[in-house]
Amino acid sequence: MSTPDTLEPIRLAPAAKASRAGAWLAAKTRSLALTVLPPLILIGLLVLIWELLGARPGATLPPPSRVVQETWELIVSPFYDNGGNDVGLAWQLLASLKRVAYGYALAVVVGVGLGVLVGQSSWALRGLDPLFQVLRTVPPLAWLPISLAGFRDGHPSAIFVIFITAIWPIIINTSIGIRNIPEDYRNVARVIRLNGFEYFGKIMLPAAAPFIFSGLRIGVGLSWLAIVAAEMLIGGVGIGFFIWDAWNSSRISDIILALIYVGLIGFLLDRLVAWIGRVVTRGTAAS
Image (cartoon, rainbow, N blue to C red; front, side, top):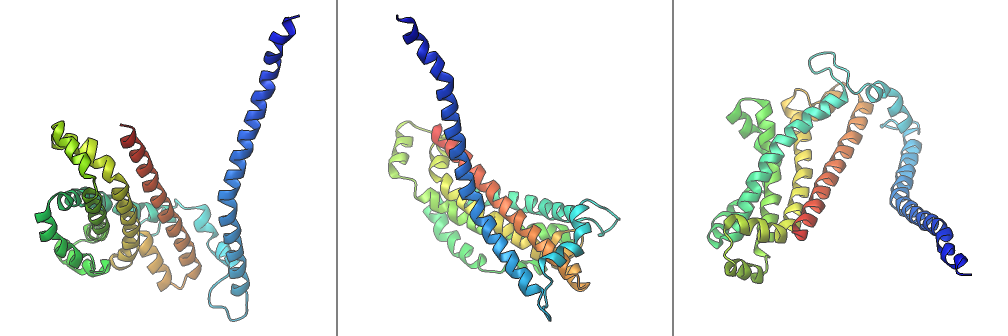
């Protein structure tokens, strides 16, 4: 009589697993819907309003339907290359991203280093902080004539503008994070006699990482803003130059399409840095 009792859990196990899998799938689907549907609905409403306003007689901006129609070749052929500056939007965006990568990487290395110095040393804080506060208020494009005069070339000048724009939030947030490290952490480091590298990797970085990555996220957004503006003035291949050239040729639909791409790339850059920040923060916390 004991056989049914021992077999019953085995017969119910697949059904229980299927039930749990179904509940998990339903929860994930609901979470995805709650995340994706609100922005999609809002974007749909904005596009509809734009279409209605753009379709009115005398409207100065084209509606979305006309933008798609007039830029269809740019959308479906982003990698065309006819030589010179006549290239697809993908190449324009890649050229801008390349400049951003160089300038932003330099800003990260120098900004984190200076932020650690200012956060650790009260002498450095008193000496450098006033200088930083003055320089960070200079508009990004105001640096372009100086960089062009110094480098005599548009490419390094654009990289310098990105660097000088992105570095300030990185320095400020890093220094704040370093200064906010609890004193108990510093005392523990003294007791176990950590050297400078060990202190940075085991104490300083885990404690200050949220502040550092907040500055990095602000910096990458400012980098993308700066390169688009700078490329309008330096010319050559780049999404900023594409927008300015389209304006000079009265291609309003091309400008709108480029602005959409600029916004999407900026959003993805911010998400990428935020994701790296979460990975690094979890990793340092786990260690």
